[in-house]
Length: 408
Ligand SMILES: *Cc1c(COP(=O)(O)O)cnc(C)c1O
Image 1 (tube, helix red, strand yellow):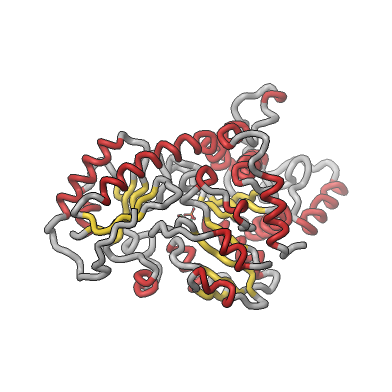
Image 2 (cartoon, helix red, strand yellow):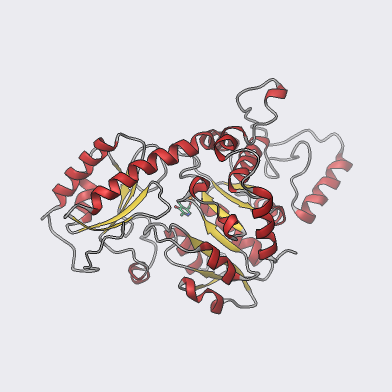
């Protein structure tokens, strides 16, 4: 049944993962299983916007079928907005890694989230329950009601009480952007009852966490981040059961937020190194988090229990001075690339969130967010050490969130 989250989650958990092949094997083979038989090794890129339709009666039937359940048409996709074989390879591979039946790719993470909201809105289920912090634009999309949805912000413990008959979605991030706060997804999925839980898994990636195993019905990625992994492709994807995937494809067809085939190619290539990239960057991040938390110039460090390559930390000095003093690390928004990036969420990634709401969810004006890459950890530490030194005594922010606890 469409809304029976518990059943579909159980089924997904049973049927999907751990699969026959290990995650590292899927990363390099999923979505490519037919290549050798075709006499190919690298993935072909299909740039067609349209496809020959000699049998127009047959095409009418296939289009009618798509309008009914959004199933990917067999054979050529008719038109580029209905589907693309190269993008489909990436979707197949990501679904394998997340342990879901299907995945649907979009032009960006925000296009993917928009499509999920539109699916629910189109069913009259306009109410969303969400836990802060979320990525700044996700927060903004909900708060501003840009797509006609209405949001209730709650603590995880308040989810069940906030559900209404018209609640179409519960939305969480864990670890969250930018504080790295972690949630008990299993408990949250339970509290959701029959309402689909969407877990944004951008930070953890399927290498560290597969939310459907814990009862989430929908898994969202900004594929712009770790899945692409090299800072050169913008994309989003939702991994889910085939029934919801069909609705997402219908929305994608109607609203046009398709992923370009070249991006699909780059993402599939990115997936093949995802496990090794995530593990190597996480090892760097764990070591940097350890050093930062022992450093007297640092007030607080947030590093998730499940690990990962993201660190959030607060400095005693002026965080803007740290940003302007790094040399090897690039001061830039976004994350998940092979190189290390640092940014000030209150100024950039979460600027669009109302200042009071932002601070209330733990995004203090002193917080810095570090996306750790694959450089040598000693080189990274030398750069951070120098930047922290430059920040000491160079003006400071008003005493706000003055606690000096270290939660690493
Ligand atoms: C970046 C990001 C998004 C938005 O993705 P885009 O690809 O930039 O549209 C959504 N969620 C999280 C957690 C993000 O970091």
